[in-house]
Amino acid sequence: MVLEKIISSDFRAQGLKPEDFSLDVPGLSRDSRTTKKGDAFFCLTEDETLARERCTQAKKNGASVVFSNFDFPDVIKVEDARDAFAKACANFYERVCDKMKIIGLTGTNGKTTTTHLIAEILNRNGKKSGVIGTNGVFFDNKTKHCPLTTPDADFLHKTFKEMHEAGVEFVVMEVSAHAIAQKRINGINFEIGMLTNITQDHLDYFKTFEKYEKTKLSFFTKNHMKKAVVCSDDLSACKLLRNCDVPIVTYGLKNPSDTFAIDVCCSIQGTHFVGNVCDEVVNIKTNLIGDYNVLNSLGAMAVCHSLGLDGKQLEQGLNYVYPIEGRFNVINFTGKNIVIDFAHSPDGLKKVLETAKTLTEGKLFVVFGCGGNRDRGKRHKMGKIAEEFADVVCLTDDNPRMEKSEDIIADIEMGMKKSHFVIPDRTTAIRTMIDEAKPGDVLVIAGKGAEKFQEVGEEKKPYNDFDAVYQYFKESDPILNRGKEY
Image (tube, rainbow, N blue to C red; front, side, top):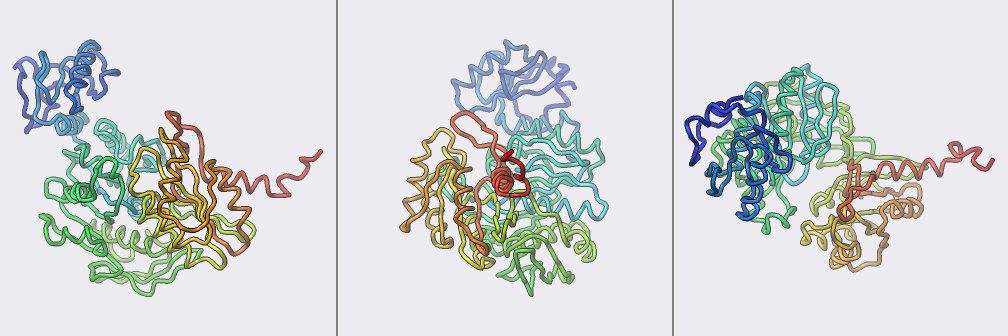
């Protein structure tokens, strides 16, 4: 594609020559190490020394044109390299993002579940949809790994093109705060943007809650979307009701909303409730568990109703929806209920344990840890929450990365006063707590959900909570183990 078609109309650059516009560019690159001959390289770093090194490396690798925020020889200086790269990616992939309806969900918790619910409702009503988010990329009965909750613009628009070629009409994607701050989503015209909630997380990156909140809320402008769907129960989200330049539809359980629920009844098997979606009454029976999943369901219905679906279609789409991998998945073994959930923030852990507590006949156990090289300020809060709701707490590893396990656990213990287990090896911790539990007890394994690895140092070691539980059950089943003694 010629460079003239790649650079956007609002592209502000210094140093572009007339002949540059006719350059034939075979690809776009943001990694100088993998830049190929003829590529247009966009240097995204804000560090001038690193930028100089990367621009030099990209040129050595054959880049035909190099863009950067800095004014270097033989480099095109742009006003904002991240914004330029995102919009260039959209153009390079022929702006297929404009040929589908894209729904973007942001929030600290609930994004993954709600994206899958929206896609399920759409698919069950004959509207072909795809999903991009934490659990991966899903469309056309295919699944592929997603490198980030919201991937970089080159991966994102390449995926849009693949989806469009497969006939996808609707793309439902998670929009992380990092993606908003790093402008990965710039240039996408979202049909609907949704906000689930804003609670503490990622302060290792954003430093203050106020900056994290401001970043999330900055997504909700007419520059990004046509309409917003917002949870009226969330205090931060309510700020949008007073200051937003796009139409808003609200949903909630506690505050007056356009979409709400009554007669909510939850059990370990699922939930049923009566919903009112913008004055249409629906009867919902779902395999999802807990009030927070009622909220997720309400949000999904508000989005789909805004897309034109009626009450009957919402019922058809949501009733008995498939459970979302790693989100309050229940495994029963000899009367013990094991719950696997991705909850890894204070608010997320609280909601999962609150729900589990209401469904527990005996004692509530929890196994969890906190990620290394991430927001330390949430660790002691999660320790306090765990011992407030659970009868038995076991602290373990959860992606310790470059930190020492004992240092992470010590930070969690700062918020704890009661006795508890400390078993750093996650598999051993899970097996020990299953052994400790009795029929009627519930064990929550929190923090990793569907993740397929454990990050230790610079390694990603194969690991999965489901596998750890199933392996324990397999070894404990006398039928499966029959004949081993021979």
